Image (cartoon, rainbow, N blue to C red):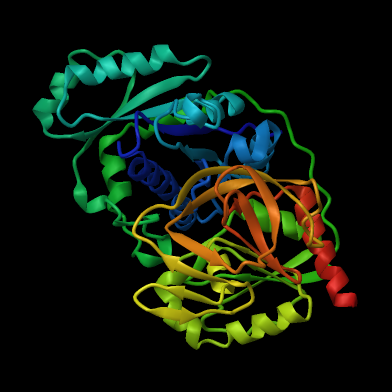
Amino acid sequence: MPHIPRIVIAGTHSGCGKTTIARGIMDALTRRGLRVQPFKVGPDFIDPTHHTVICGRSSRNLDPFMMGRDGVVESFVRASRGADIAVIEGVMGMYDGLMGSDHASTAHVMRLLQAPAALVVDVRGMSRSANAVVRGFCEFGDGAEIAGVIYNRVGSPRHREMIEESLVARPFGFVPRDEECAIESRHLGLRMAHEIEKSQCIGDLIENSCDLDAMLEAARAAPVLPDIPDRQAMPESVRIGVARDEAFCFYYQDNLDSLALAGAEIVPFSPIHDPLPEIDALYLGGGYPELHAAGLERSAFGAAARKAADDGMPIYAECGGLLALAESIRTDREYGMAGILPARARMTGRIQALGYSDGEWTGGLSFGRPGSRILGHEFHYSCVECTNDARFSIRLARGSGISEGLDGLYVHQAAGTYTHAYFSPEFARAFVSSAAAYTKS
């Protein structure tokens, strides 16, 4: 196995600037001619879209809760083949994990991958105290290496000098305040990459204020990881339509790869702009259907998807996809949706669910094998009000789901969930098998 140089961009807390710093490092290294493989710790969908645009390689999520230890290492090694360096953006504070532990934290991923970190510290309002924070982070963890520190939002040359008086770790850079490089946010997070123009300002900022050579040195010192054998791909036997447009944009790349390995040809299309293609199954990811409800209401998608569902086509929809399969969605007014699932959706003014979900399929669907586990994440501002005769195919041990721990609202072979699932190989094979059975029927 070729050696994979790698570095994690960790932070002291959410909002310290690690996303901006990570994007800038990826941009600066790419401009040097390096092939950069990007990653994101945790279940985030939005940051990876920016990574992918910057690096020209699909960014992957690394999440021990959803993927397990072996899944994290396997995804990392496979995706990094052919890259000169892997840059991994952390999540929240470096040690912040599940329920007050460091499980599924940035530090957890660092240990699994034996990857050093550049710790991002927001130094607004402090000087010497910044190094007290650094010392605490360096001494607190067990087996997670902080190779150097990036002091972010430095106010002036004098501010930098004051910090340098008491350094306790190798400085990788002193990044000045620059609000022009920030990305606008909204209720589900930062803007998607396709919604903003690519800017060189972040790469320039990092190139001018950080020691990239020192970071490369640390990345190249990471030990060799064990090789991962190639998974044998099944011959393509079905076509799975995947909704990809401004309304549906939340997908784990590993999920699409798992479907392809199981024998699916992935057929991207836009429910807003395109007719439903010739397919054997349909996968609707999350996104922002509430922002494009009028376009969805006008499109031919609803009627075509409803006919496909009535014919028994396997349809799997997550979060935003769930809303699109409902009878309607209420935002500024009520918009008609596909009308496949017996429920009405509405947007609310606050978060309805946020966090990991863990459950099992209970039956009713050819692709949701009873007793098989489903792991994922919830994050939504909507609620779904179902009819009294609604049927559910998932029972959650952790998470809210659609109604009191029940998820996977279904009719025929069409199901909608609030869980953004990370597909197991078993689920991918079951979904492809269900599509193949539908085609033969």
